[in-house]
Amino acid sequence: MARSIGRFPHLRRRRVFTNGRNLKEQTLIHCQMRSRECFSEQEIQNMRNDDFHFRLQAATFAAIRFAQTMVKDTLRLEPRFFVALNASYDGNRENDEIVYPEDDGRIAIDLSDSDVVKLLCREEAVPLWIDIGVAFCTREFTGLSLTCCGRFHPDDQRLYYYTGGTQPFGIKSPALPIGHKQDRRFRLPKRVEFLDRFQRFQAAIKSKG
Image (tube, rainbow, N blue to C red; front, side):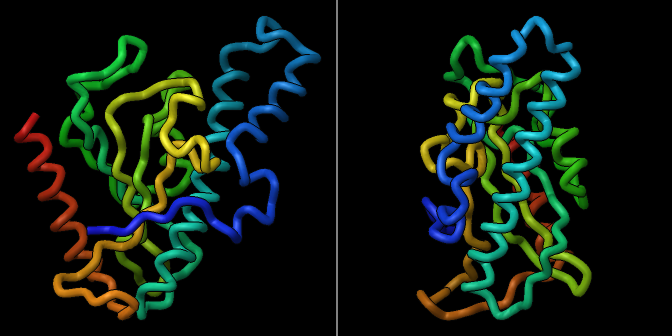
């Protein structure tokens, strides 16, 4: 099990993080000087990628800070990402939501933030939700898991966590150990332990699909 947090006081100090609409409004103001037709498809994709990259970095920082209040380990602000794709039930998807059946059971490990952007930004669309949380740590980096919805959409307002301004990222705690007592700090699993659980989790999802 993992715990979630909603709004983040340390992020609210900076207006750009407080509401997903702020960044969008800034983009719209800029775009008033140029109609959409003036942008190439590549320029539009690049703007979408930059926006997603920014939100990934903010969510990463929040997840590491959240985890540090719970674990005994010292977490480095050097992230590597471990991505589980298509971890949702998509049988009741809306007509305008995009799915990629080839992602069933797929994982991607040891990614940089730029690698994550390349993997998850697809023709301006991103997963409707992505759960992000610290999974393990080493002396060199902090490993974070990204558990992704299989449905993609290009509209920010359709993404989960939009009202909190972290869309599509839901900030989760590390997995709590069996018998965990509230307010008791614990040790994160080793990398090999996490990867074993991570791979078995995705294999179970694929078998159910």
